[in-house]
Image (cartoon, rainbow, N blue to C red; front, side, top):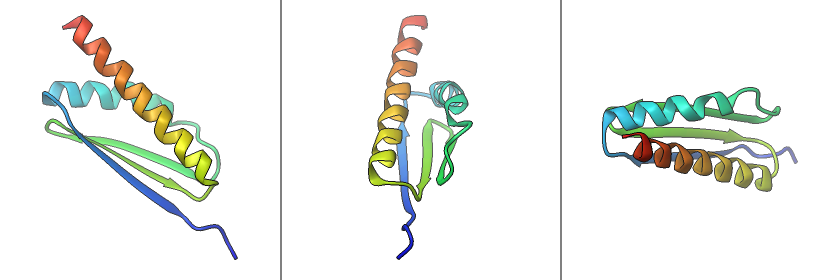
Amino acid sequence: MGRRKMLVRIELQLQSMKDAAEVAQAISPDNIPLPKGLAVNTDHNRNMLSIRISCSRELKSLGATIEDIMSAIDLSLRTIQVVD
Protein backbone atom coordinates (compact mmCIF):
# COMPACT_ATOMS: atom_id res chain seq x y z
CA MET A 1 0.00 0.00 0.00
CA GLY A 2 1.36 3.42 -0.98
CA ARG A 3 2.01 6.20 1.43
CA ARG A 4 -0.90 8.51 2.10
CA LYS A 5 -0.68 12.24 1.72
CA MET A 6 -1.29 14.29 4.87
CA LEU A 7 -2.54 17.86 4.58
CA VAL A 8 -2.31 20.49 7.31
CA ARG A 9 -3.60 24.04 7.21
CA ILE A 10 -2.57 26.52 9.87
CA GLU A 11 -4.30 29.88 10.05
CA LEU A 12 -3.22 32.55 12.50
CA GLN A 13 -4.97 35.85 12.99
CA LEU A 14 -2.28 38.41 13.74
CA GLN A 15 -2.48 41.95 15.10
CA SER A 16 -2.19 43.67 11.72
CA MET A 17 -1.81 43.18 7.99
CA LYS A 18 1.79 44.43 8.35
CA ASP A 19 2.57 41.70 10.92
CA ALA A 20 1.05 39.00 8.68
CA ALA A 21 3.05 40.19 5.68
CA GLU A 22 6.30 40.39 7.65
CA VAL A 23 5.88 36.95 9.21
CA ALA A 24 4.96 35.39 5.85
CA GLN A 25 8.06 36.93 4.29
CA ALA A 26 10.28 35.93 7.20
CA ILE A 27 9.29 32.25 7.16
CA SER A 28 9.01 31.79 3.39
CA PRO A 29 12.77 31.35 2.73
CA ASP A 30 12.65 28.33 5.06
CA ASN A 31 10.23 26.68 2.62
CA ILE A 32 12.87 26.07 -0.09
CA PRO A 33 14.42 23.61 -0.80
CA LEU A 34 12.26 20.93 0.77
CA PRO A 35 12.72 17.18 0.72
CA LYS A 36 10.77 15.16 -1.84
CA GLY A 37 7.23 14.52 -0.61
CA LEU A 38 6.94 17.76 1.37
CA ALA A 39 5.40 21.04 0.21
CA VAL A 40 4.79 24.22 2.23
CA ASN A 41 2.89 27.25 0.95
CA THR A 42 2.69 30.46 2.96
CA ASP A 43 0.31 33.32 2.22
CA HIS A 44 -1.42 36.18 3.97
CA ASN A 45 -4.69 38.03 3.47
CA ARG A 46 -5.18 41.12 5.58
CA ASN A 47 -4.09 40.10 9.08
CA MET A 48 -4.55 36.34 8.48
CA LEU A 49 -1.43 34.23 7.98
CA SER A 50 -2.08 30.90 6.20
CA ILE A 51 0.32 28.00 5.93
CA ARG A 52 -0.52 24.87 3.94
CA ILE A 53 1.59 21.76 4.33
CA SER A 54 1.35 18.67 2.14
CA CYS A 55 3.36 15.66 3.24
CA SER A 56 3.65 12.14 1.88
CA ARG A 57 6.62 11.38 4.11
CA GLU A 58 6.50 9.85 7.60
CA LEU A 59 4.32 11.42 10.28
CA LYS A 60 7.41 12.44 12.28
CA SER A 61 8.58 14.47 9.27
CA LEU A 62 5.27 16.32 9.22
CA GLY A 63 5.50 16.93 12.97
CA ALA A 64 9.04 18.27 12.68
CA THR A 65 7.98 20.56 9.83
CA ILE A 66 5.08 21.97 11.86
CA GLU A 67 7.37 22.50 14.85
CA ASP A 68 9.97 24.29 12.70
CA ILE A 69 7.34 26.56 11.15
CA MET A 70 5.74 27.44 14.48
CA SER A 71 9.18 28.20 15.97
CA ALA A 72 9.99 30.47 13.03
CA ILE A 73 6.65 32.26 13.44
CA ASP A 74 7.26 32.72 17.17
CA LEU A 75 10.74 34.14 16.56
CA SER A 76 9.43 36.45 13.85
CA LEU A 77 6.63 37.78 16.07
CA ARG A 78 9.01 38.35 18.98
CA THR A 79 11.36 40.22 16.64
CA ILE A 80 8.52 42.40 15.40
CA GLN A 81 7.61 43.28 19.01
CA VAL A 82 11.18 44.32 19.80
CA VAL A 83 11.57 46.38 16.61
CA ASP A 84 8.21 48.13 16.93
